[in-house]
Length: 462
Image (tube, rainbow, N blue to C red; front, side):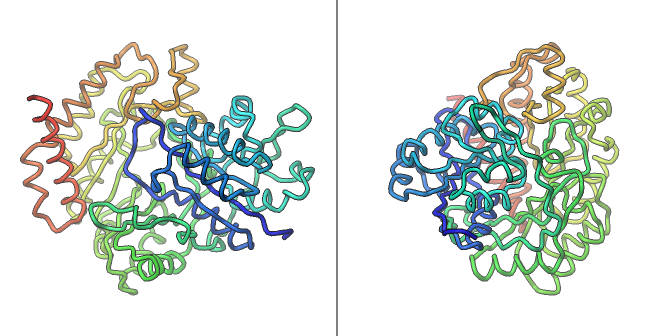
């Protein structure tokens, strides 16, 4: 390593008018902070949503810190804020290297560099090793051409270096550096719920998702011992009293999932956790083992109750698998949350009704209705572009709640009415009474959510 580099990592402030999700801990930044810290660099993290920093506050903070390297993360809905943050960062610290990463920047790297001159470098895909090499290169700007996985300007031209090979042994990663984050801010109804990622890569090819493009099609997984070591560390060192697994498909490798559950039981972790997975990768055995290990919620992306739509989005599942997985998970005593996607090209009102019928028949405990959103890097975006349908240029609307492209079969009003009417019927007083007295943490959380929805409806009536 060369000299110690002062680095600041930024999760940008939410823009006014852009939908704000539940506050979450940006674990990607925590891993970047960890590898930089591990290599001896000075690290500061500014998670603006958690710290309640606006762009003016961010500029003041950066001026005070005066970092050599500023790394900014962004998803598509927050790219406008990220670009504004980059502009502010360059104003505050004109001699610093401003780096942008995340899914949106990965797939729109050239456009990002064209839109905002303050961005010096875009890091594509996995960023841990790349960011360390960038920090080490500050004393030698000519070294950029030798760093894989970046896009930058040179002599007025945009240069894309070769893609960086994905890290194979995830056990070699340091633990995420949560010491740089205000952990007291990340609470869900009184619980400090901390995230963990135990794998990267996805062999599935869903047309609406960028995971396989971002992290590769190969499944790379940490060992069960390494995973539960981190759970113990989160509990004992950081006061976690619940965990959430951020893996795309927790049960993709059945033996590994069973071994993780067994390790959690044997080491008496004793805290509730949740995960998401595919309906095609669960069984009665594995769901029961998860429940025995104190898993309380499982999340399935069922997407649709219409086989034609499941095939169109390349989900690789069937309606019968959706029904069976929900039933098995409920029988195992798990709180079952599902997501469905509406408004996909070619979908009709009759197909939407198939999805509503599936939900009513299977009776999951919670449902997220997501609007089909053509994110950069997805096949869905290519499909919409090829149809010639108009797409919104306002990235802040790409929140899976707001329709962002014209669909001749389903108007914006059709989609909004369906979401509203469904939630009004789903979150009923009966729902509240069914969940409020259960011991399951997620049942109690959703009972409160349903009650808030009911009160909101009453308020708007009067």
